Length: 284
Image 1: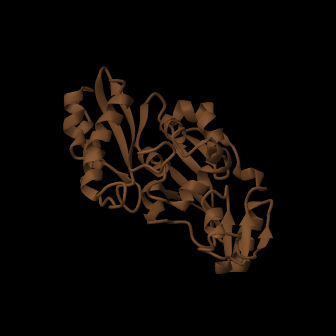
Image 2: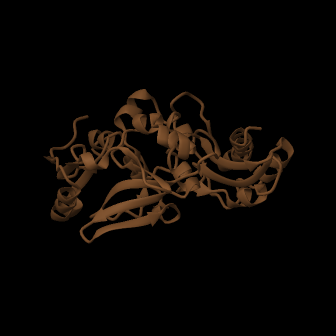
């Protein structure tokens, strides 16, 4: 299908983009990489009067070191994030997840901030961002504000970004030296995950000192497996200990039921995949 007619704006600064949003309100949609919005427009599931393309705002692209965090511009393509040495060294969990995201074409066009702002609970970036304790910088008419990952994902396809605001960058706290792994279960390659687990682990002498575990597609938003994290602390990085901790992976979750599996199947998958992800992250 062909999208309904719309006006097209391509601001070159964040201030211009925010002003355009304020001017057009509910009639406008933000275009980042377009991997989520363009199919919606083509199927006419949404028909905005104005599309505001962020692609010409250079300040929204790139990766930089900012002391205790790695900062990723919202318009940075997935392919750039996945190959960046700073991300690989200090936020390895994101590097592990990005390579599993869709296919090479989507990774080339899709953007880091766009995917997170879309907030699909089956998306591959929400759980790693949550596990790392990311912070989201949002620009609006009143200036900028920073939202913690725990407060960013509100509900299905809903985030803390207001209708008159734009996500500008994502701050990833450094987890230098932590092991990381993203375990994704699909029926066919490049599919949305039926369930996926993002795990990053700091070990000391074969013992798990700290662990962060994020769950993909186990509810209406990405989730932290906090019971697993607490159970892993101080435990040896062995199959037996990790298996026991992973048994709590589905606690507090509300996974969907669809053609790929029912909720009980996903709960079982979560425990199996958590064990695999944690052991791999711990180098066991």
